[in-house]
Length: 503
Image (tube, rainbow, N blue to C red; front, side, top):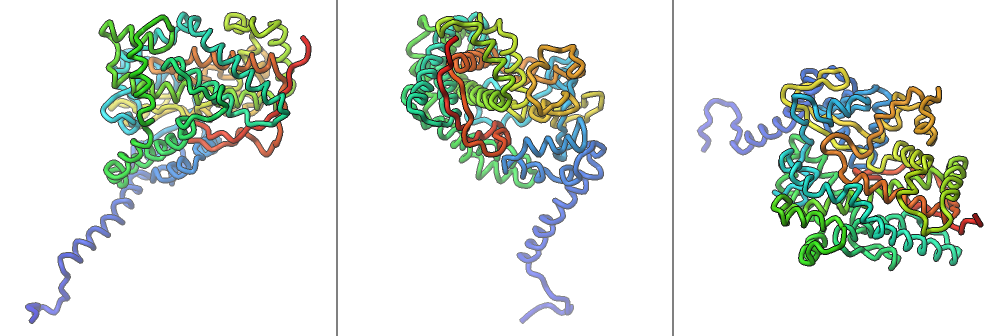
C-alpha cells in the first residue's frame, strides 16, 4: 500500500538520476557553445560562428582528410588570422614565424600543443615532442649527424641509391611500361633513411616491392591524426583517453621493427660507417646522449619524417615540372649542361645550379610536403602575434599549405614560377613575402634533418632529369588535390620514361 498522501506523483530515484544526466548532457554542450561564441577571450577574432562554438566543425574536416582545403577556404574568406576552433587561431602572416616559433627575447619559448597526446611510446619523449630541456639535450645528441660535414661523408651511401633508382627506371623503360612514380620515389627515400639510421635498408628498390612498414604507414598516421582531434573534445576526450587511446597508440607504434634494428645497430658499435646512429653512439658513450628508449622513440620519428615528406616533395616537383613544360625544358638544360655522365653528379656541383634550387623552393611553396605545420600554446600572460594581442593558453600556428599559396603573400600564388626566387627585383614578384616560406619550420625546434632532405631532393631530381625524359599518362583531374592526414595522401602518379637523347 502506497504511503503517498499528497496526491503528487512520486518519481523513483533512478528516474531522477536519469533525468539529471539527460539534462546535463543537453545543457552542458549548450552552455559551452554559448560561452565560446559570446564570452570566450577569442570572441572578437574572425571566423565561422560554428567554428567558434565547437571543435567538431574543424574536426570533421580533419577526419575527412580535407583540412588543407578547409583551412585555405577559411583564410580566403576571413583574412590573415582565423579562429578555426574555440581556442585555436590559424595565421598566415610572415611575422608569425618570429612571434611564435623563434627565440623571443626575454621570454620563454611557446610550448608545442598537446605534446603528450602523440606519444606512441608513452612516458618517453622523442625529439619532436620533448619539453625544452629534454629537447635541447636530444638535439645536441643528434645534431652532428645532420651537419654539412656528416652529409659529405654520407653522400656515397646516398648515391648508391641513386644508381638503384636509375636502374629501376631503365627497367621500366625497357619493358615499355607506364608505372606509378610514387612507388620508386618512396622506395628510394625509405631505403636511404633506413640505411642511414640502422645500417640496413628495406631493399625496396632492389626487390621492387613495398615493405610492410611502408604499407601500413598511412594507416598509422591517419589513426594518430584522428585521435589528435578527438582528444580536443571536452566531453569526448576522457572517454577517448581511457578506451580508444591505448589501442590507437599500439597501432601507431611500429611493432618491434625500429626497436630490433636499433638494438642490432647499437650492438655493432660506432665503427667506421658515417650513418646517423654512429654519431648518436659517440655521444651516448660520452655520457651526453640519449637513453636507449629515447633513441628508439626518436629514430621512429626519423623514419617517418625523413622518408615520406621527401618522397612527397619529389612527386609534387615532378608533377609540377611535367605540367609546366617551359620550366622543365629550362631545368633539363641546366642539369644536362652541367654534367657529362652520372659519375660527375655530386652535391658540390649540384649546388652550383641556381635554377634547380629555385625549382625546389617553388615546389615546396606550391606543394608543401607537410601541409599542416606544428602548433604552439601562448604563455599564460598572452603574446603579441602579427600585431595583435592573443590571450594566454591559446593554440596558435601557421598552416603551411595555406600560407604558402595565399595571394596575401605571393603574386599569382597558384602558378608554378621558379623565377620568383631568382628575379627578386622583378616588379611581378617584388612584393612576394619570401620569408613566409619555411617548410621546415623555424627557430630552435625547426626540422633537424633539412640538410639531408635537400640533399636527397637535389640528387634524385638531378639523376632522373639527367638520364630520362618523362611523360604523364592517365591524367585525370589535378593530382595536387589530395586528402591529408598531417601529410598528403598521394594518388598514383602514372608516367612513362625514356632515356634522354645525346648530350
